[in-house]
Length: 293
Ligand SMILES: Cc1cc2nc3c(=O)[nH]c(=O)nc-3n(C[C@H](O)[C@H](O)[C@H](O)COP(=O)(O)OP(=O)(O)OC[C@H]3O[C@@H](n4cnc5c(N)ncnc54)[C@H](O)[C@@H]3O)c2cc1C
Ligand code: FES
Image 1 (tube, rainbow, N blue to C red):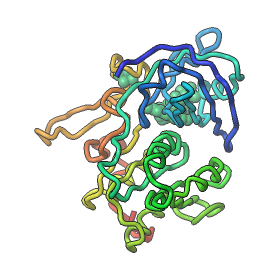
Image 2 (image 1 turned 45 degrees about the vertical axis):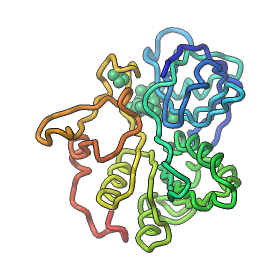
Image 3 (image 1 turned 90 degrees about the vertical axis):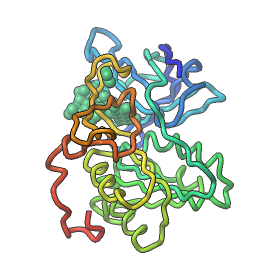
Image 4 (image 1 turned 30 degrees about the vertical axis):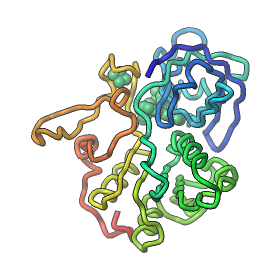
């Protein structure tokens, strides 16, 4: 896929939830070949050099006919704070599309769920747009969206999701919206009671959520793809900063690394050595939650 450096113009900015902003950018050279799950590197600095590096953001929505894409960003530090304050009309240096996106389902007969934790809704929405466009509205209830956040104020507005006609399950850790559960617990409860049979899962969220989902899905015969994050300096495979420990299919004893920016960010979670990323996450299952997660 050709990657392009383009000066993208910000057409619109919108606060969507607590600390979460949406930017609409005009980038007619980047958008045509972009796929859900791929990302862009955005140079944040408007003047001076802080922050020096570009920052990675997933395509949140793609509007190919208009040469537009959207990003949904959560403010966590200097770069995202500056971006959230850039006014419409200003331009940003953007490189993309980068990385490997989601693989579409192999056929219309598959039952598919999207599992989004917090800002993880960002890349999954672009995929949802693609899936709903291919699914007759009478069958969209076979598309499940599990969307969880810590609390109600961190959820982006739900009405556009509801309008799509998909089966939406909302959960919050504190029970202030939807059911009180983690997003993985909400999924597990429905799958294990037979309410949601699943062929394929697409997911994005925090590291604890991803570890939890990877462990739950393992051995259940469900195809899973996850969009993973890592610290990224270059986004093109040049700095080695985004490497994650991975399973070597040919030699289980060998140390192997994958680059999130070029091998991913979308991965089969079975490829990742989660125990090496954060040993604390690899503790035994507890009986604290109904799903055993
Ligand atoms: C492929 C990819 C796609 C992404 N897509 C999105 C998106 O669609 N929306 C969104 O809001 N964010 C996304 N991120 C994360 C986003 O890039 C970081 O939040 C951002 O770079 C932080 O920049 P900052 O200057 O504000 O924070 P910094 O000042 O650099 O850091 C602030 C805090 O955030 C942590 N942090 C920084 N970068 C990351 C990272 N990549 N992953 C986890 N923690 C990080 C730091 O450790 C620190 O604790 C994505 C990351 C990757 C790798
Ligand atoms: S971010 Fe530089 S190699 Fe991946």
